[in-house]
Image (tube, rainbow, N blue to C red; front, side):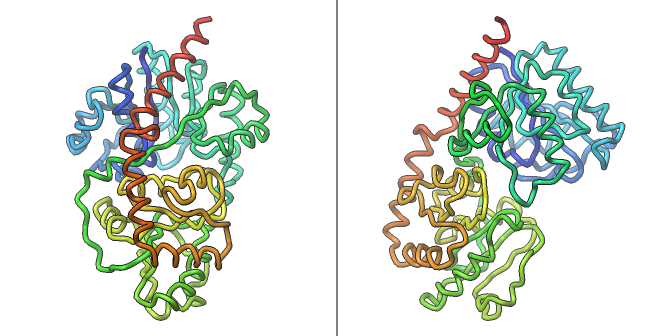
Length: 389
């Protein structure tokens, strides 16, 4: 079996450990679509791209050598997209070139991780071979634009095999997009284990609760700030760190923690060393989301054995498992969120027990990348068998 795994740097945290395990089982080629704006994201650190579009072997980028312990770089290709717009001729030709390489290699299965954008529609020439992971079965409220709906609608019309990463949204996904249940199969995420290999940068702050990740309106940060106003009255030595890039969509001045210095705002891109340092040194992580699917933030926290307080939205409850790896609270419920934060601050033995649970279950258990890779391999085998009938 030959597989082409096509993805982007945005998802490298979860792609790299999965690809590494899959390559132990099957002949898998990794095609990484990279543009000027994505060349330094998550685990991907490319210094400079070729000004000409094309598909280049990873060996042309010696700065990627650090990935050699995780994946087979001889089977890794950089799909260099130099155009600033999806419809640029250079990008269109590059995607077409990628398709030609895949056809030339006689690939049996093509695994996508996101619906192709309109500048990538040549990918659908491979549609009978494609399975696609839907990281967002239902779009976030802040990302439900007409263009994203177009990409999704085309995807759902042309493709037949979808992988969801949580069971919670399977029924809604099938109903919303009028799919037969046989078109949808389940997998799940594991901890972003590559973070364990990164030397942390010690933060300048201590004794803090951490929110990290992209800042947008569906993240519910305003409710966390209000909850921390209550927490800091009881625990004046505890701070909140909000770390991530994005526009602050609400007025910080209304919260006491902002004016009295109990809120540390790092409103910018964080490199991996800084992020790992922040997670490792935190008391625990909070995801106060208003809506969600699954969460890469939770998997980043779990990679470093940090418990998470999360809201009862999307698949977050099935990831956190209330009382096992963290605490689940209702969304937008400031009082309950504050109470959950206070409970963990006041009971460090609970944090230690949750950390032990995370370490045990995500290293070699059913939530490990090894187990997930076996499930994905079975999905590929069934797709190939069905195609040969």
